Length: 160
Image 1 (cartoon, rainbow, N blue to C red):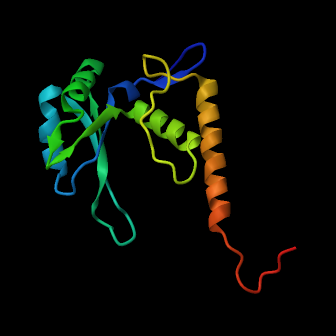
Image 2 (image 1 turned 90 degrees about the horizontal axis):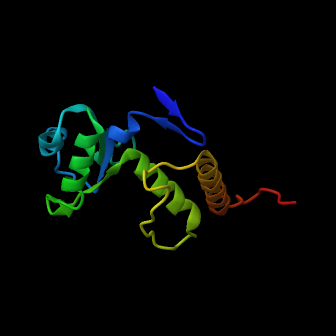
């Protein structure tokens, strides 16, 4: 169900859904569920796999877990973010935060610049509709610029 406010639209499930990143290739779906189940009832889990290319069938290194309540998700985020798993620190954010962080980070940095963590939106993790639209436009512009740089004219093509 979608809830609408004066300047935002939020899916009420997104505040219970966590992004888990920096997963080691040895971590399985079962291991991930076992690590996160002490914090509450997990209602869904999405473990992402490469679907094509040379890494087909291998884990992508991130997953999503949705809890039954916001409080369970918040507790899991607090306890698991930065915790070592197979020698790597886990990155745990609300899924909506991850999207907003990526959109802002990708739209604000140039080619070759390193990524830096940025905090986006209000303290509640919500972003205004106008800010979301601006972030999407910036992302599209960046993608178009990168696409144009990657395209090189083939020998025999006429350039006028």
